[in-house]
Amino acid sequence: MIIQYFTLISSFNFVFLAITLLLKKSPIKKANTILGIIFLLMVVTGFNNLMAQHINIQPNSILLFYYLPWDHICLLSFGPGIYFYLREILGQPNKIATFVFWKHFMPVIPGFVFIAYLMVLPTEQRILLIKQNMEQNIWQIKLLNALFYMQMTSYLTYCYYLIRKQLKVSETVVLNNTKINIKWLKNYFLLDLGIMIFSAPLAFIVQNDYTNAIISLFAMNVQFIYIYYHSYKQTGVFLEEKIEQTKPPEHSLKIDDKIADSYLEKLLQTMETDKLYLDENCSIHSVAQAANIPYHHLSRILNTNLNKNFFTFINEYRIVEAKKMLSDSLYIQFTIEAIAFECGFGSKTTFNNAFKKCTGLTPQQFRKSI
Image (cartoon, rainbow, N blue to C red; front, side, top):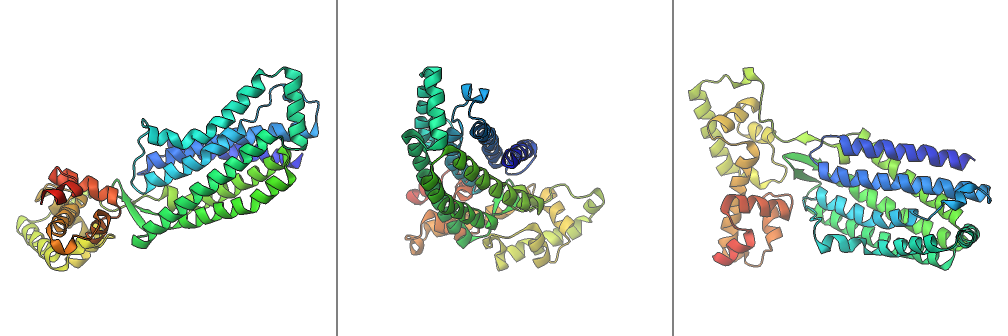
């Protein structure tokens, strides 16, 4: 009975987190939407587990007439969901209307096939099969469990590889002019891999649906607590550190034109000599400090004198530097990604988008045109 209450409370927790992620305004809205959908799938899994626990306690329950293992379809969607979430965080948009996107969900098909098979069976035969599975997993469920553990472990391993690769460059990425700390994701994927390694032997040794329900409940709650902790600390999924303020307070805009011109000259000189834009963590605050210009005055002269925001201003310098490197035979062996990092960009995707916006060509097209 305690397990049933715990499952019910966990399901409501997942509903709360899903709603928070889906409704919250954020610079990583698309990534949060994917994570919110994952938690809604956890809700379905939680209520399905609740039915399985009730049937295990009361074998003649009326719920036997309605029970179907929808949880396996949800579980087989978690791996692709986490992968697509990470892609959004790293600035790699997911193209939903493509075969490449939907092929990741092909392992879900056996789950639908098994449910369709159960639905066409006579009621008595289906109930008998469900009862049998509660005591000892039937071969179809064993197959779906094996498919889940192989798929989930593969996705988590690949996601861990991607995040480690990014962390070698920087612990932050910039999305929609907002700096996002991603260091916590490395520990998140390690935690999930640990859960997979711990739970797989239990699932295949005990082999009954009641035990599997408890294992999946434990795994989902560990993830919930971890992500909620990071959201509370304002890191990871909820971090919103703006790297510029395009509309400073009105009083800060009052500046003499001659002073503004002198500030602009100091700014351009500092950018040429110190090349602050090559630092991926370059921010309007660090530039203002290096050029000895009040922060709000810097924002003002960028908007008024140059008619551009800080993000555009910095990227233009980076693109000029990138064009030099792409045109120089000394860098012929450098990949596009390596040049992006050398010029201060946090990811190859951000570099490609900024370069094409400024030149009308992708970096690869520009290199070939030289």
